[in-house]
Structures are given as C-alpha cells and as structure tokens.
Length: 91
Image (cartoon, rainbow, N blue to C red; front, side):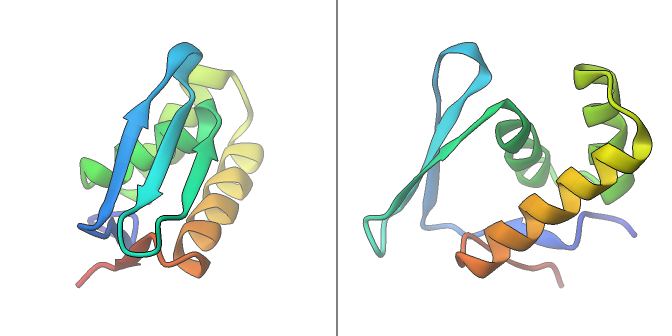
C-alpha cells in the first residue's frame, strides 16, 4: 500500500492546538471535530500521504504502544474520518 488508503478532503481545515491536540473544521457543513494527540498525528500523516504501516510505526514510537494497539487505533480513526466525510478514498 503506497498510502493509508485515504486523503483529506480540500474543504477540511485543521488547526493544531496546545499539547498536540487539534481541531478539524468542515467548511461545507460548519461542523468541527476536536482531535486528541493520536488523531492529530494520524491526520497529519494523511496530509503527508503516509502509508498505513508508516502511521502505525509512528504511533508505536510516539506513544510507546504495541503494534496491535497502534493498528486498531489507526483503523478506528480512519473509519471515523471516512464516516464523517472528512477524507476520501485515495485513487
């Protein structure tokens, strides 16, 4: 897999807050989503076109978690981003 399988949509903007947290704003719906450190790391990785395995490895390093936990967290967040129409499937 060359990327995570998902790409952030152009009408979603992100702002990084203190302590690694952030906020996504959907300019079309005016909805906003608060991101914790994990979600912010994954969002930034999507913006940079990182592969799924790269995201997992970064989570394992930054948060000192095992691979199983990192995979589950990444899959869960990617699914949530997709369900909320914040990302599209990569082509």
